[in-house]
Length: 312
Ligand code: TXA
Ligand code: MG
Image (cartoon, rainbow, N blue to C red; front, side, top):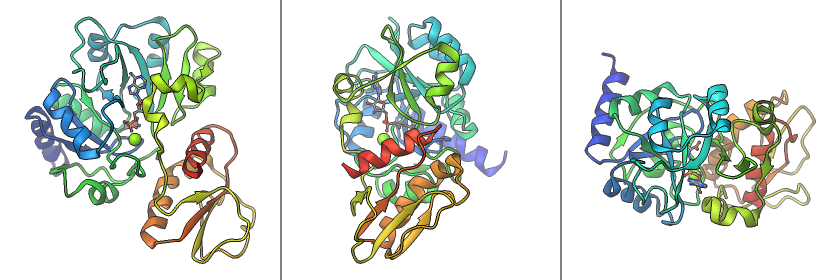
């Protein structure tokens, strides 16, 4: 057995004992616990200082395991077949014998489920033998970590077990699609795009802020906000301000540091770089970040949604 596999087995044992494990997924690093163990799940909320009203996503390695915990429907069967393993989570009604503890779902009768594309993540879940609930591995309200080093820096003092999977392939969180209502509704933009979803099941809705309040409480909180603040204008840069740019055009002058999310205009590369660059700016101690919005195509919709929230 190689070292990584040994660590995966060790971390799976830790999950079974009720400990928390930071592990990579293709989107962002997660802070995982045995989804069936309420005492373990409470530790996630305490460690992140996450409001208890904000439910978690349950991660699985196999569809047959998901089907034990949710009530499936046609759209779910089509979409899971088309995408999983992938950066998309589906909200479904809990089954009668749902194994996921109530703390994890914040007492709701629905649950968000996902099979991640990351092989390390699926390997961990298989070895643990239970679904793993995992929010992003950051203190509540801060940027999501997209590398082992960032996760370690954010939670290293509080969490004992970390799995190193290098940098995350996608770089933004999973798309969340509510399948419990008549018209499937996007609760969070992410790694799988609306176009991709609509190609499989036809037109979907996008939740308004008001609709979101009971549905995805997490979306109400001020997420993704770099500590130094972020604005969507390039006028009158202040001292030590950083510029987050995109594409082939020449960026405006007057900024202390500039980073281009993708100088060749590749939207997927931009998603992968987004949190990395924001983390780097924070580390450099810039006074403020000025960002431009990227084209509203593909994962660009998720990037812009995050930038707009960060600027609020
Ligand atoms: O990519 C991801 O989804 C990452 C990785 C680790 O898998 N996880 C992640 O988890 O982003 P978190 O906790 O940061 O975001 C989960 C979101 C929250 O906004 C929460 O409100 C929503 O999912 N959510 C969870 N269960 C829900 C439910 N039953 N109904 C509506 N929204 C739900
Ligand atoms: Mg999060």
